[in-house]
Length: 150
Length: 188
Image (cartoon, rainbow over the protein chains, first blue to last red):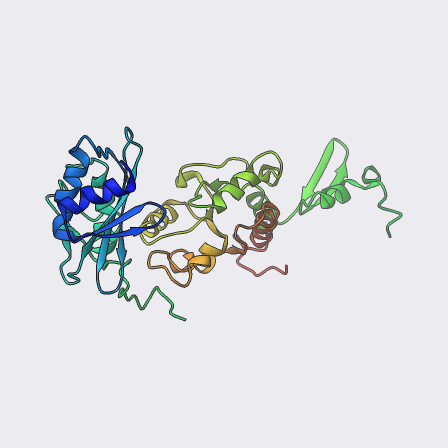
């Protein structure tokens, strides 16, 4: 599918998507609608995104993004989907672990470092840190003893 | 002064021993020789020349330590031949690499399991003070002297193998001036 066709396909699912042209096509949707779009993108034969090559979290001070980078081996198109999470107190989003198996590990890391809860994740737990740490990759993380602010 | 010691085979037996670093005097007697020395000196000399290191490389400094251990720089000519993987049989722990908060109890446990007399070499900037991770990280221990007592610090990121060998020789010098038996302080 070309970029235009991908844009139309996603706009059919979620009309208020915002698109950006960067290295890949970026689509920004709201967090609550992301799961349905991802499931369709994986399963629909025209798009067939079967390889999620990265899932990461970004903290933009007022909201979070969970960014999904995916590529289709058969059609050879790439897409970046950004799911916006505006709730900073209790951020949560539906897990993509049952759509792509690799998302399990990526989501464990995002939960460990950002604190974004993934609903329906098979075994959500802190991966590297333990429960006494806060969430270090958030912009408002403060650590008096360790981080020396200049 | 220099003309007399042109050839080591011209030295007396005592002279040869001194040239090799052996503390003591050799008295030539018929049927063999007699060596006189102080027990402190002998024990220190023996201990300093056979320190067995514990393999403890966590990070990039471990690569330089491996290079020091292999053929080109070769620390085994100084006695560090047998690098043991178990702390029970090791004398010195060359802590090469970044220590994070999750690794700190492991380092302390390994240090406790070593038998006295034991020594610690802090290799690289991360073990001295947190190094390149001093400012903005939540996970690195800012210097292993928060965890174990350190004898020799080797600065560098990573220190060259020659710098590590210099540190090992400094440690040997330090051991030679200890006094295990008599308790009297030696002059350096």
